[in-house]
Image (cartoon, rainbow, N blue to C red; front, side):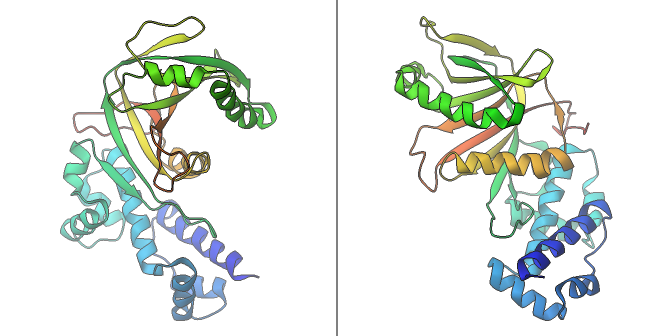
Length: 295
């Protein structure tokens, strides 16, 4: 078995212990999978991934703790013990070092929390996310219907963007943008109850008159889980969706509000390594602390 295969098996084992069993990492089992001593494995891990094995596990625990903090009503002391911290004080210190804010403040406020995604060999990207309450806003743009059968939407949606650039829709929308932060939205909406067909819209926030050929849509005041994706598009936004579908939406599913899911593309160089795009998931529920229940 190749090292990459062994390493992925070990990472899967770590995730199972952290999430399903909520138990410490088993060094003997890792040595067995790796086929070498635990100390030698740690050296290989560090060489291959640019970070220590213990550091990776610590970052994963603090990522999962951030999910628990914002999506459940668990007490902070219980979260600290769940992830192996001997006291709430030590957990608070580690949480603040990783996320840049104490857990109590993170629960009570709209803040960005750092993410270390589950490591996939040969591919690792950093994400951050926050829960934000946003006032309602009006969107103007163009809409198509797209079939999801056989992954057709993966081809049709990029083609729709290209079409809007070629037919002049894109510059018209940019001229209509009156949002506080300039940028384009991509909206995903189900067509009635049909799970095999969606409406996809390219839109901007605007309070201007609706031009012929375009459609308008009002989105109500809503709470969103907002995920930052850094890097060239479409790769960065696609990796963001893979992360959400593979981990966040599966492990920590907030209640989905009856509102479209959004992509937001900032007004910048879309091919730059620091280019910012975002995924907005509408969530509902919540209590006086701003946390949200699970499905």
